[in-house]
Length: 87
Image (cartoon, rainbow, N blue to C red; front, side, top):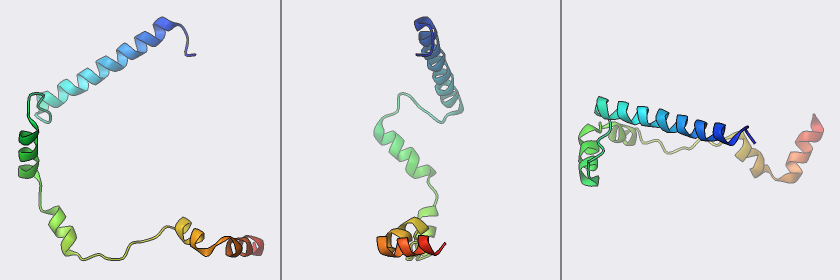
């Protein structure tokens, strides 16, 4: 498939080491605590969260913008055929 079997194992090992380096970087920066419980993670999240959710809700946005694909599907097949034939 990708070459020799040992080469595939080497690639897997390389990916493993890359991931391990990333995780160690997260731990050193304080972004990730391996021994934290679920409740500690939730408490940290609640403390770090801003009021962005409340600000968005205060905007009172009710209209959703539909994509053109959804609009075209709502026209039905007959309308689509007339649009395509008009071109």
